[in-house]
Amino acid sequence: MKPAPGGLLASHGLGGQMSGCVRGTRGLKSGCPRSLPGVDCLSTSVESAGSSGTPEDRPGPVQNHWQSVRDHSRVFGEFTYVYPVVSRRSRGLSIGVNLNPDKACNFDCVYCEVDRKTPPATRVLDLLKARAELCRLVDGALAGELARDPKFAETGDLTRHIRDIAFSGDGEPTMVHNFPECVRMVADVRRSRRLDDAKIVLITDAAGLDKASVKEGLALMDANHGEVWAKLDAGTEGYYRAVNRTSVSFQRVLANLLSTARERPIIIQTLFLRMNGERMSPGELEAYCGRLRAIMDGGGRIKEVHAYTIARPTPEAWATRLTPGELEETAAGVRARTGLAVSCFP
Ligand code: SF4
Image (spheres, protein in one colour):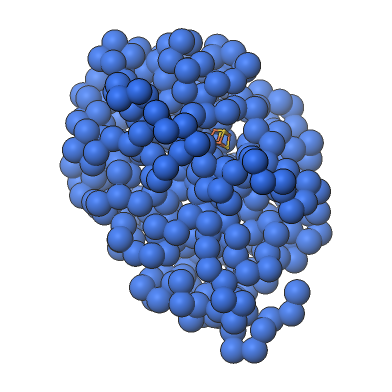
């Protein structure tokens, strides 16, 4: 892929960017939350959480109304495997690495925005090509070329600083057979570009965290400023099955969260929604908080909870978003019951 005149990225009329696993769209991994449109900016929610945090954890100046924050497309220019996102959760520029161009996932979340009716452009994960694309996108961002793309007009210098490189695409990253090699590739690029303060983030549904290859990849991430953002949407088996619609047992997910959180602090990502007009019941919320407490009581460390809601219409019309006020109310309940910091992404 050759840089086009006048700028690596902008010249393609590149637009678009991310979502899927809580980061998808008919295009990106959305059910998997990354940057979600809403009304409030992150800083309000974090302050209300009473979370002081380390400097790196304090909210950045990412505004929810920015086009680059609201646009979740995972298609950017001619890239197949990588895409840039200005993310509230990342507090700045996140480079997404889509390990699932085949759109494979072991969940079928009612809120997933990955378009699985459209055949994927490719089903092959070509790591050499992914590495070349990642190098090019990183270099373009650092050189200020991304900042000149019309899509990022509002974000200015934010796009010159890479907050993280995140495994998050059109499916579940831990389903690939060569996860350690994927981590190694990203770690090599991160090191070669001296992105010392950039995290390597895994956004996952947690179902595959017990696989030996994934554990090996997580250990590599640990050595390279890694962080796990893991999904937990329910407190009971019944609600889990209703929301995530998977054959993976709830106990396996819970056990994976615990064992992973015992090895390193993790972030829990939870999508709160209405199904057929009904919010999560008080009993379900209590059970959900109980799962979080069980992780902590079992020696697991939860750095923070990311609470978000549906960003745009989903394939299931009966799955709808919470209002910012409802989400904040829910988050307050989680804080009160668990003592955890909860950031809202309405
Ligand atoms: S876990 Fe899979 S089905 Fe659920 S939102 Fe993420 S990509 Fe979609």
